[in-house]
Length: 165
Image 1 (cartoon, one colour):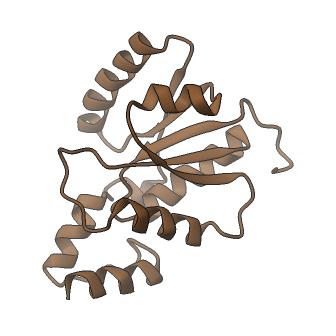
Image 2 (tube, rainbow, N blue to C red; image 1 turned 180 degrees about the horizontal axis):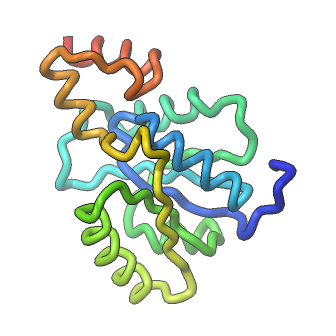
Image 3 (tube, helix red, strand yellow; image 1 turned 45 degrees about the horizontal axis):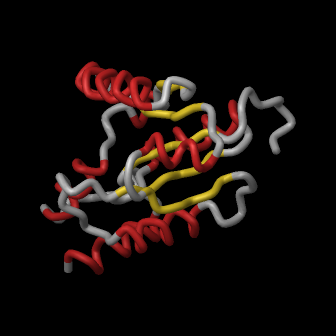
């Protein structure tokens, strides 16, 4: 664990991570500084269309953080609050980039509190340089053959290019 004393351990950071971006990486590293242990919960909501399968996304994230202690990556099936209970976590981390994110995340936080009142939801802001970054934008740029440098790690750029041709 980092020399800095953590607040609560572990914390769950859920998302689809399709693909993992530098914004996600920033939030994971910030959360680890605060909480010591981060469980990245990779989900596959039925409302989204994915570039990578859930197993591919888990493998990508594990590969990126392979040398980091106290970062676990698992598949999220079912309700987030059930996953959080199972992991004995006390908090959920959510990244907020803009007011539009806040509206959705605020609603989800209240619903999670209704379902599991003991779990706190904590919003983290990314570094300014990632405030605009989203997986959806990365996929759109990729499909339009744009430059992905600085948005996702290089090995992920290669995987995206291979996936979309």
